[in-house]
Amino acid sequence: MDGWLAAEDIVERSPFLLAPDGSYDVVLNGYFDSYRMATASRHTHDASTRDLARFLDFLWFHRPLVADAAASDGDRPRMWRDATEDDRRAFEYWRCRDESGPLVAASTWDREVSSVNGFYRWAVRSGHIEHSPIVQRRARTHSRNRGLQRELETAAERRPDVGRDRVEWLPPRMYRAWRDVGLRGYRPDGLPDPTFRGARVARNAAYADTMVRTGLRLEEQSSLTIYELPDRDGFHGYYRSWLPASIAKLGSARNIYFPDSVLRDLWTYVEVDRAEAVTRARAAGRYDRLADALIVDHPTRAAVRLDARWIGVDRLGPEQRSRLLRRTAEGLEPAALWLGGDGLPLTLHAWKSVFRAASDRCVRSGLMIYCHPHMLRHSFAVTTLEHLQRGHLRVLDSMNPEQRRHYHMVFGDPLDWVRRRLGHRSVETTQIYPHTLAELEMETRMALVGDAWEDPRLLRAADLALETEDTQNELVVAGGSELGERSA
Image 1: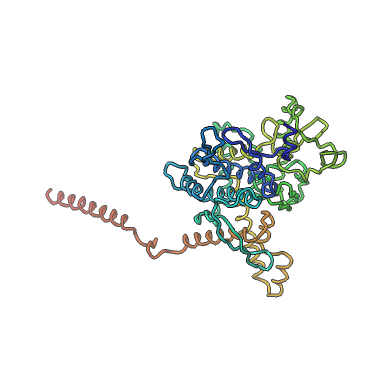
Image 2: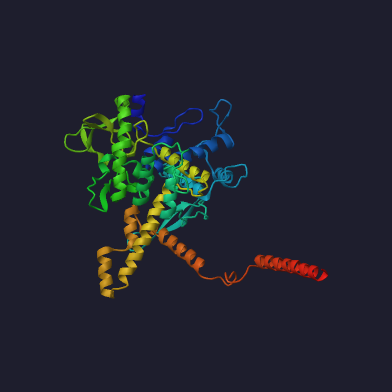
């Protein structure tokens, strides 16, 4: 096997797809070693692989067979080289419009089209096929240099109803309610719930607080090691650390700022919950049995030995960091910051399950708040931008034009500051958050400004009718009483 892998130039640990009959297509799986896939984040990599597998399974099981004299019965299943525009149309109908199909959301379909389109564009460029089954259309994009427009091609099947400017986020008060009820086990009235049986409360709350206060992505935060956690002296409001390009999406290395209260809780988790999990795992010998572990044993810095070279931890990707161990006076332990009860690094799927369970608990408690990890990143962006804009405008209001120009040169634009904290390459991506603030402002004004159609000073028709009926009843009763008195 090793000889065949070497002969086919297949990179170690590369993902691969197998056909339903168990066959391995060397050309197809070569896509996963392409530049597009090699530079993608693990999350994007996994999603693209699943999307492509779903389309290929559809071809194999649900599309007409292909005549092939070499096949035992003269026909064989349809494969990726055989795909046509008709196959693509049938796939789109099944995924999006067939009542017996999954009826996926527009955003899901948009991602699937991009994944399959990326594979077929690579296949065409590499000369494996002549035409892609994904219809292309011309699209214009703005270059970063001087705003010039460039003509590009994109998949024509992308649906126009994807809510790209829609942002789901939680105001601080709602976030605290979700965290306390869903993760910490409190009741909506703020009292502890004696029936709560959740585990790893301190870890989960610290994880959520870190995400909502730093704006890190799920994979970025989950890939942090002890080495990225700054020391805390208690004399600073924020503590700066560096997010390396190896775990930042699209290589967007940047500074991250931990609030003092968040860093305090993080170190408490490290010194208590995490330490207990490590002690149990060490006693069970779990770390000694890890065959593919990478050991940090450089005498003076955080580095591992790979192929007779010392490689810094800051250059290791998420997958390598999940296998990273460091030597301490007590023995081996993972370098990863976030550990499960078994003392091993948590997966992205595990964190998503934590958030789902917390949201489900909120609903069962009568608190209709749902939250997923990326919503906390949005919450950080919206809340931070709102505070920065408010202070920015307050300062500028008291300045003359020259002072304002100097202020912009020194402190910059709040939107650009948020862009840097989020790791966006272009401020155009960050523009969704001012749109959210504009919608929030509109909702506030609509709530405060009277509506001529429903003036709160006027009685509603239903209330007026009810009041009229009550008045009539009172008159009938009063009249009857008066009549009775007269008869008497």
